[in-house]
Image 1 (spheres, rainbow, N blue to C red):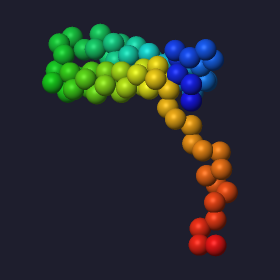
Image 2 (image 1 turned 30 degrees about the vertical axis):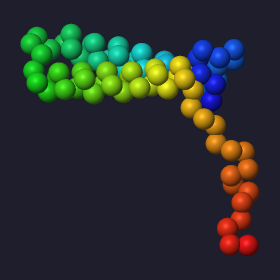
Image 3 (image 1 turned 90 degrees about the horizontal axis):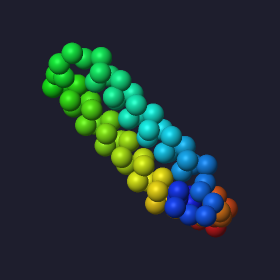
Length: 77
């Protein structure tokens, strides 16, 4: 998968970025609904922030593509 910083980013990296920003939007919306952030809400905010940040970094760097012939190998022959 080509990252967002490459010349032609792959659709997977674009989807990761969009999903990360959607998660951040949902997180902010949930925090706005609560009058006083409780401990559970703070924990949810940190978990969603970690997931969104990880998806953003994965989209920027790009994940390695699987080899094209990995399904052709015959085991034991």
